[in-house]
Image (cartoon, rainbow, N blue to C red; front, top):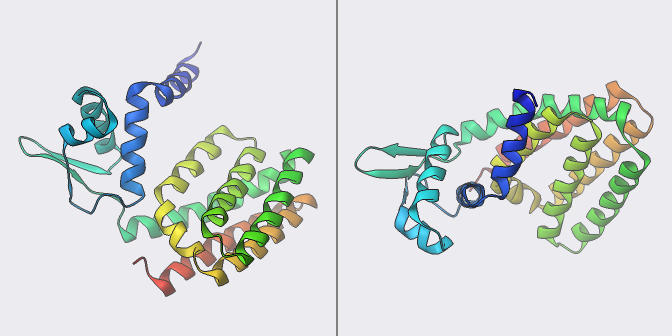
Length: 225
C-alpha cells in the first residue's frame, strides 16, 4: 500500500470513527449557520450535546482550525471563524472552472445509468420547484452535481468539489429558495445534461461554468442575509 492509498483509507476510516463523526457534526453546524461569527465553541457543552468526552471534541476543533473554520486562542478558547462573503465568492469562482472541467470529463466517462439518474433528478426538481418544496430542491441539486462529479471519473475532482459544496451549503439554500433561481437552475442543468449526452465536452464545460457564474450573480443581487 502506497502513501496515497494509506491516506485515502485513513480518511474513509476517520469519517466513520468517533473522532470523524464529531468533526463532521461540528463542521456541519458551523457551515449551516448554527453558530454565529466569533461565537465561542465550548468543549464541555459540545461534548454533552454529542454524548462524548472532551477529547474528540478538542481534536475536532484543532482540525477545524487547520481548515480555517475555527480560531483557537491559547488560555481562552475556540471561536468560530466560519466562511466570509469573500470566501464564498472565491469558492464559487474556483467552482465555476472546476465544474466546467468536471462536465467536460463526464462527457468521456458517463454511464447510461448516470444519465438516467440525472434525467430523473431534473424531472423531480421541476416537480418540487412547482410545489415550492425548497428542501427537496436543494437535495436534488446536491444529487445532480454529485452525479456529475462521479461521472467525471476523477476522485480528486469529486473530493474537492464535494468539499466546496459543503462550504457553501447555507448560501445554496438561500439562493435555491428563490423560485426564479430554482427554475433557471433546473433549465441550466437540463442544458448541461444535453451537452453531456451529445458528448460535446466544450459545450458541457461552457454551460457548467456559466451555471456557477449565474449563481454568483444571483448571490450578488440578493445578498446573503
